[in-house]
Length: 283
Image (cartoon, rainbow, N blue to C red; front, side):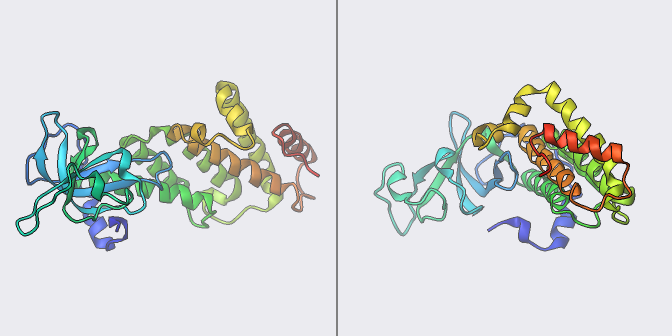
């Protein structure tokens, strides 16, 4: 069950909350908390909403679970603890014997110990993870060529990303903005004819060349076939920049097979040469 599917009015009201320092607070028994497990891809983020039932000497927390994202493997992040209910005593030590599926947190008579570093105030956690999801939605709309997606909207998503610890997405968002301006008038108006896109696409591929010269490891990873998934997901910058470059190169390559009769022959020649150097020769 995910709060991302709840009514839009609830999300609208929540957007007015101001996010503080997510990990600066301490919590008491009875507090409702949000336990976040961020992922590099954002799409694979997971979370737990629960109530603190015990504060450990280490500063970690034992919580009873109210809500969580199904499918995430919580085994590496949670320690199950068997609890005794008034009407039913448990005979299971620390609870591991009862935790049959580490992707679910709804087993009866179990609570979970979580690291303090992952625990946030309930509202703070909701805000941050909703904004993470919204940031992915904007990037995903660009990836899917949404017809109405103004560069200003992408710029706002970039600023939001910076404010919630996703500053590594900045380069990918900058490429997304430039891509929109290459294919649409003002970035969201009429689609350009293929021949109109060629000069801008050459400029985009020049930017990719600069990125590769600045970061040779990025270039090596982009050229890998198949790519090392651990390296690809090492951080947000690498992950989102690689898939952004993939899109730019593929879209530029597709333009070579469109009607370019009105295009500047030198620009077409430059694009063809550029793509060949990137391993995408025109056949």
